[in-house]
Length: 234
Ligand code: OAD
Image (cartoon, rainbow, N blue to C red):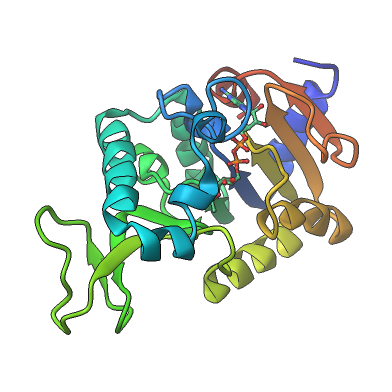
């Protein structure tokens, strides 16, 4: 940890309101692959083949198989010490919001309550025709209206769920401290929540293995694993 860890601890202790943004790095220690960097999913798979509306229209079976494979990894994974530390922090704050870009359910399983899924959820599926949502089921994916379902996640070229983004923006703009964990901060609009928190006057703390494009604008950038840093920070 760097020299600002002590200051960061103090900001977090004093904060009445905390907003968190997590990315794939938050689940990396649980064995869920990240998207970028060594071993990242986008090193081995092309997003345009698997994570766009066009890919699903061309080959829904392939896209479902890819999500089935990822769902199996998530189902076997367990929350790590970072997830648990964030859940514990929520219990001590008057206002707490956790916006995640992750489609897994590890924050829920660790006990976090006020969670916003900016990029959807891998265990949800949505009808292409009527937009009705279901918990993911085995078997044929046909909606009661007769339409077929698709994974309930946000794909490239699609907008984020508006209400979710608005809630996340409100939280980032009204918090005393924003904690940014395990995101490369290159995918927008999620990444824009970081400068938003800063502009609105929050102390911004980043926890990441590496430098990100946001490291220079945050108040404290802590280099290391979320599962190791968060428990000591909180
Ligand atoms: P990325 O894979 O882009 O970035 C993961 C980040 O986590 C990197 O900056 C790593 O350095 C960091 N990291 C890895 N292990 C870590 C650990 N143990 N502790 C702390 N940090 C760690 O993932 P995201 O930023 O979440 O979108 O990617 C954003 C979006 O791009 C995803 O939600 C997904 C993807 O395409 C959609 O699917 C719409």
